[in-house]
Image (cartoon, rainbow, N blue to C red; front, side, top):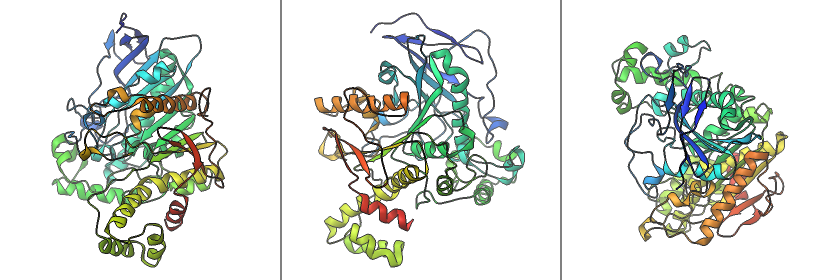
Length: 493
């Protein structure tokens, strides 16, 4: 590996040094906001204190406070943050930039998943080297998760100049995007050509950011992998500020605290180990001014090119119910519409019911969000939208690890990072797929259109034709195969 001298860049807060490897300049652990600790816990991100000299930025900053990362099911260590450091002092970002030229390069900012309760930018599969080699500037950012990222409380709302609280995680993302706007030109990036991308909770966040007035002028495109926030759901019910504040009051009482000051005096571990109740973005009247559905119906979103999709086996569920139990659960959940659901997700026997439950998990959690988002953007927006289905069943390291095209499985393909995954017998077609997917992503970041030389033509998604790109060992453009299922769910939700 060829290494050069440490590159030094001047940011608005001071100089940073990184490393250069094979023509790519890499900066890790650049602070984009003040540490959200002490009196800044549960406050909007504050400006960084400028520094003198050169800050060495060659290692990832700490991941946000969360339970210890432990591999489970299909998610091996490459999909998880490093075990340490983990800290409240976590508001750092990372930049991979090709060598500077006179032309400013498009920027892609990646937002990690983790259910808004875990995650961090230091995961191996988020490495930006391969994307930078395709001539864009790649950025990964941290944000607060769990109760640290979303606690609302009447006292916190009183402290705020906007009279709201919670949604600190989204505000962290906005602060990172403002940092990119103000600083990325120094790294060779174009501050006026910034695309946000995210997977799972990161995709939910991308949807909120694409709809938020706080990001106007900061983003020109959006990529959402397995996630969206258009509709309330069983895993992310609709919540308003007053409900979130009431949850926060109950949380404080559970720790014996009668004030925010007392709560801020609790240790991070005490906060982490308490039960905060519902956690995640909500309608606060500021970051999220109104319901996402209404925002898109009214055309009030940032009307930007969008690329989204989900995976064939995008399911998050425990052991399947028997056919009888499954039918009972459908009747309980859907009432008079249960028969319509069972016609699309049948329960002829236990085996059929197990398949239906997997498809229901995928479609209820991820599919219906992307489907509705795509429909609304194509119908009410002017900017194009492109939709994919990731169908490549990842080759398992063992029969017990065969989870198909599992949730998060597309990430190392989309960012050309298959080389970071251990113990999976990838074949030539996998590496070709990763090269193709990452090229679509890079083209989209550059132009708002994923198409380019040497790639199969990816049509815009239109509400009538519903043509999607199917990613597998061979690419294919086809009508959305789950249209009837998702149309029904979208109508019922």
